[in-house]
Length: 168
Image (tube, rainbow, N blue to C red; front, side, top):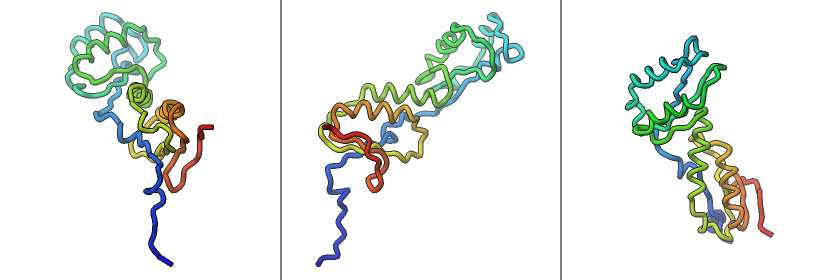
């Protein structure tokens, strides 16, 4: 009898999809517009436009920017649009919301355009452990993208995965 250890996971047809491998490179920053509001709650158009005009926008070069307001101020839609237009020549992407919403939007765009044909009729594990801030929505979108093609979908690691879907 042989004492050779056989790695059945490595020898299986199991494919792992690791969202960290497609994680968009680049710094994420948030921009709180409440700093440009009178007492943090009142937007005065002329003052807001002046601050936008004078702001150093090139500090956002090649960054992902999430625009938000940390106060309960009512912000007119044009204010976010104005800031996004100032950021457009510098930032990789501008969204309205917090950093988690920014990540969710980035992954939604990535996953919408990803080719999953290599996973056709194969068992797939969506890797669960991540060192980067992968939003929960990315896992949901990936599973939905894989479901029409994959033989089965699991979540976790090869040594301890949770079965989620099996084609009938």
